[in-house]
Image (cartoon, rainbow, N blue to C red; front, side, top):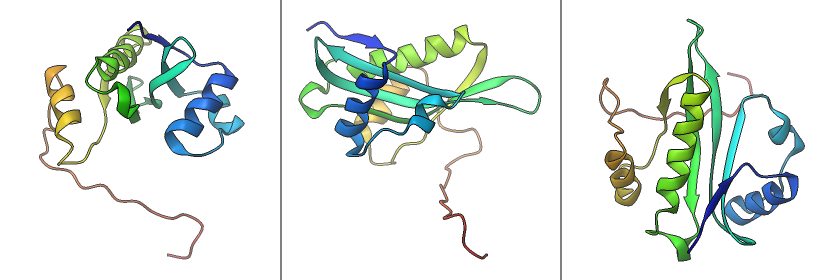
Amino acid sequence: MTVDIVVPDSALLERAVSQFMGAQSSRAFADAPNTLVFVAVNGSDITGWCWGYDLVRPDGSSMRYIHQLKVAEAHRRTGIGRALLRTFMTEGTKAGATKMFLTTGADNTAARSLYDSMGGGLAAQGPTVNYWFLLGRDV
């Protein structure tokens, strides 16, 4: 199977968002200056995607954040996740990023195996806990 990793045009982005998020793509997302999206395609079939952001740090350096990396169930364990992650990392290096981070579930052994095999390591400060806030409410 031949898979290409591409930066999607608006039509491909719309299809990927629908397929992996069950939502409609937002123009604001596509137009945001630090948004990064890569889609894995085999012909017209979308087999995976990853998206995230370039984040500028206070010292002027930058790092990448992957918010989601997902491979269609029928295409898992075929190297697509690895290709997406490698592309995200390679393009980050070309853009001057020196670090990259992501979070995943502690029980997501497939993802953790991939990240470990590609040189990722657990945060030096130990286990982390994620917090979500709903904005626009009185606190």
